[in-house]
Picture 1: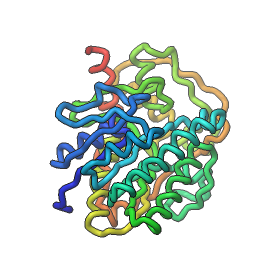
Picture 2: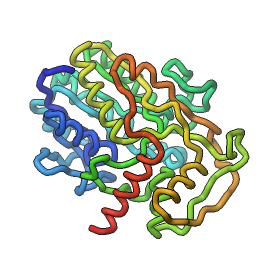
Picture 3: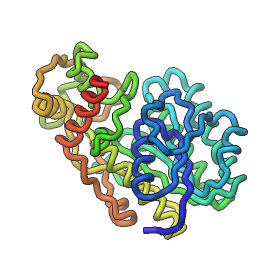
Picture 4: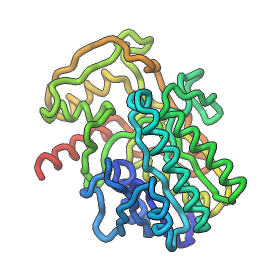
Amino acid sequence: MSTEKQNILVVGGAGYIGSHVVKALRDAGKSPVVFDNLSSGLRENLLPGIPFIFGDLLFPEQLMSAMDGVDSIIHMAALKAAGESMTQPEKYALNNLSGTINLLNAATAAKVKNFVFSSSAAVYGEPQYLPMDEAHPTEPLNFYGYTKLGIENLLRWYSQLRGLRFCSLRYFNAAGYDVDGELNGLEHEPNNLLPIVLETIMGQREKVEVFGTDYETGDGSCIRDYVHVTDLADAHLRALDYLLDEKKDLVVNLGTSNGLSVLEVLRIACEVSGKKFKYTLGPRRAGDPAVVLAKADLAAELLGWRPKHSDAHTLLKTTLRAYRQSSDS
């Protein structure tokens, strides 16, 4: 692990995953600075003693002023609703693509050396084989996935032309909450299964909708590869150390290779919470593959990363605790 001092700008550091990364950096003795416009990030996710810059990727002058003393960037700020990206591509092009170009230009002008990018399994599209490794064809099914792939391609050119070393971390399904219970800022209007289940358990939703029960899986529902957000945060630290030590670019998957079906998640949520809740079985949703699983051997080999908290019970227990803490506060 590198002992080189790192002043790290975490763009989107008040968000769900970003706040967990900031906590991991702080706990490792690093010096993170949060840059966020709080459009989806939350003030309650800002940790005491961590510098915060209120700023927006769409304003280059704000980015330039934030670069003072920065030698590494973790970029996590993005719009991420795949369905919305298909009806409002202009919004996603502006925020995800143009915003990232502004960030890259500010970074290279300030001679920032290292760049860790929060990418996504959405770059792959429909699985052509399982588990999906980094060599899997990249054919996004939605414009959100296209923006992530476009940024990866930009990073390759900025590395070649400007010497900006980068690591793209292709997340599969981020889930869970801080295993220490320090962070519990809940996402507003979540699109992901686990928070939707917990909102239903907490009485904030009437029911969970299950889209499709006729897939060729054990119980007929979709299977996804869920990765605990604390494990994802750990991967960001390891990616920074890799860039500092190896001085090579890297693209890796972050997943477990172990899938959970939608109906399994509902069953375990009922078990963990001790509560029954309503769910309905509906038709398939367009664009949903039956199974998505990561092959993350490269992250294990090159980063020494292995998920420690991504079992189903830990995912659901930490999410339940966050929702209960939030309702009590």
